[in-house]
Image (cartoon, rainbow, N blue to C red; front, side):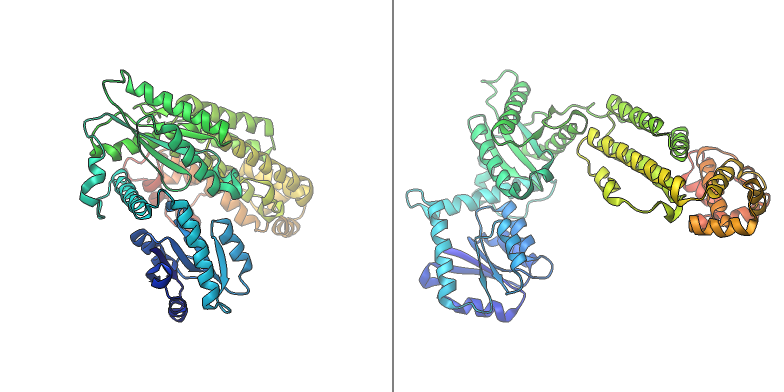
Length: 538
């Protein structure tokens, strides 16, 4: 029997489709009726249907997402899309993700649907054809799926709640044999494009063929663009198992790159025996694979304790932050490039955890972004010409992230130069420079206007026009930014900080600081200062 699942959010549609066909007489069995995409995915996992009839527009999970997710886990399932007249673009997407065909719901008749079902059924039987042993193949597919579910639950550190037939899957694995787990990651997965599903299937087939005579126990997809394979070894035949696993993985990576034209990186766990160690082995393999961030695409790496340094890295200190801000203000692109390159070089030398490296890049990004904000709306927006923080945070390699950060620095300089030479009047540029050098003094709109040789009323007007904020608002922002820097990096009491940024009245300083940051100076110090010793600050 060919198992069929019907997914549609309209109860009338579900009932109508089920009544259109004499299922049992034609070799089909309806194993479930799902009211939304999420329920359909759950039924797919529990019932393992051969064919899914799915609506396009459903709550919780659309038909397209259902096809995409289900195909990733169960590529053998066939999908037929139930479509309305105005959903052709969605149908096209569904076909791209692996749907077999579609049928229009409004004009669907029994004969048309049955003909389509029989056609897909024949395709399934052809794929299964192996001496007519369809039932055994179906059972084998089901049992393997359960075994993979079991292994995934172990590597996730979860308790397995499914059923394994007589624990056959567990007995397949010799608990006394040394094993290794490898995590395979497709490099630059987004560059594969519309052929990603085809590439993944080809990749799985190639890996299975290359590993089947090298101790392969199991191979399965793990989340997006990741795969796991388990190898087992006869200890009497291999003197150096770690070396053997590394050589197998290295040859596999080279073979895939050459014949599938896809670059993969592979992380390898330590050798283990018991399946209770799968969670640790998986974590080790993932960590080893992350070394590709520094080593580049096509990396094959064995796990060891010192893959990444746990020491605190001091490559973007307060001094570097101040230097970067100064370089941006004067549009010194060469100094900016040198500063970013110094950071990248330091990261290559020290190899901190990837998460810390990305966090550091985000700090540099936001530092440059804050300088742009000081120029108000006059700098315009050329967002199509810049990498955003999401692209940088998702970078797969240090070189890629560094290049994007450098590109963002160049983008910032180009906008600042444009602002200085076109959007800002020369009086505003002179006023900004004067404020940044003299914010700690008792300056006012009148004193700055005198310095740039204009009247205070004229300066007030053009400041608002060019900067999209008042003179007082801008001066306050500059002073509070400096106060934050001093609170974070020194143990100076608040009254001294107030004096250093141009406020004689400590209470007024406190009110302004809280208005800008939402915290009092003391609260800010307790939360963020590296010099917080618990002593009274005011």
